[in-house]
Structures are given as C-alpha cells and as structure tokens.
Image (tube, rainbow, N blue to C red; front, side):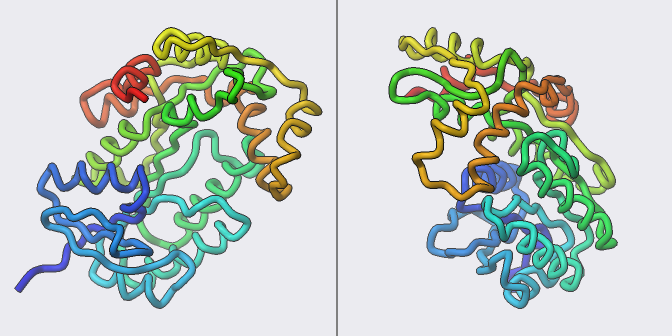
Length: 283
C-alpha cells in the first residue's frame, strides 16, 4: 500500500511552488501537491496530487489530514487574501498539521510601506496564534520581475528615488525552502530574510539589463503624482494601484536594502545576483 506523504506543498502549479516541489523531488522527499487544478500539477516521483483551495476549508482539511509539515505559498494578491489565509490556516490546524513554513515578505509589519506586506504580517501573527510550529521566509522583490518593470520605451518608471533593494531570485528562495522542508525541526520559530547578494538602485538595475541584453534601458524617478497618473489608465482598483506605487516607495525607503546571509547559511550556496540571473535566463 502506498503511504501518503506527510509533507504538503501548495502552489505547485505556480513558479515558486513548482521550484520547491522539483527541488524536493530531486532530494527524493515524498510530498503532497495541493493544487486548485490537478491536471496542471507537475508529475513528480514520490508525490500525490490533492485538490484544494485556500477559501474551501472542507477541501483543505481533507487534503491536509495526516500532514505534519506544510509549505504555504501566499495566496494570489486580492482583497480577499487575508480571509483566504485565515481559512486555510484554520483548516491546517483542524487537520492536525504540526508545522507551517510560510512565504512572507521583507519588512512585514502592520504599517509596512509596501502595502501588501501588511497582509503578510497579519498572516504571520495568525499562524503564530494557531498553536502550530512556524517558520517564516521573508523574501523581497524578485529578480525575476526586474525586466517586467521596463516599459515599451525602455524606461523603468516609479518613485523609487535612489533607494536600494536586495532583489532575490525565486529559484534561490525555493531551494532554501526545500532545504528547510527537508529538516523542518531545525528551523522552528525562525524568521529568515531571503535576499540577493547585493542591494541595487533601479538606476543600477537598468544599467545591468542594458549591458546584458544589449538594450538601452533607463530609470525615471517619478513623483508620486506622476506615478499615480501613469498607472491610472489601467483601470485597476485602488488597492492594486496603491500596491503598484508602494512597490517603488518601499524601495525609496531602503527598508529592503539590508543583505542577509540566510540563503547561503541554510543551503551552503550564495544566491545569484542580477547579472547571473539575466545570463542564465536569456530571453
């Protein structure tokens, strides 16, 4: 009889969760893949696939029965995300999960400049109050998204001033998560700051993309009025507009500038920088 794995991974049909699932499979670690759409789940050795959603408590409890360690990727950004997180954490506790490893965000706080980081702080506190063991992975903005900031005219626009942020690759976050999930007991009650090896301004990001891609990329430091105005045409709801603009004001504040050694300490390998990321991920 096949034994159902006691480690569960959410988000396996997304980029970060898929990275984590593949790294665990490479280690030969059995896992349950909790997904909304089973047909899209990766086919990995020693894995089972279970349908769930963050907002469906009954389905989540069923999927989590017998799970000891849960890797919880934060839900998709939306006004309902906190309610979904609370529902899912309650389901995990009801199902008997012992330990939650949660992907949080750098400088998570109730008054965080980056508005979406406030949700992560509330989720952290809710997990702590659940009685389950916990480990929080606070990563910052991803290196993976730097090129997406470039407009069609080759300009990165936002009110970031000359602030710095230690951007991190999703692959480095994922391999760190896999190392923690392989020995979760060693990381209980720990909050890790997962950063890249350097803190960059957006001027430096633009210069690096220019050099590696052979394009002329620049950064324009918008005023707040310019930032809201240049994004108003997308018709986004207010909460999303605030999140977009506060991405840049958070960089301006230097709250994400500190560089952490946590990735190298946990995995034994240093995280990649922007040049390495762009070189290994050609477009």
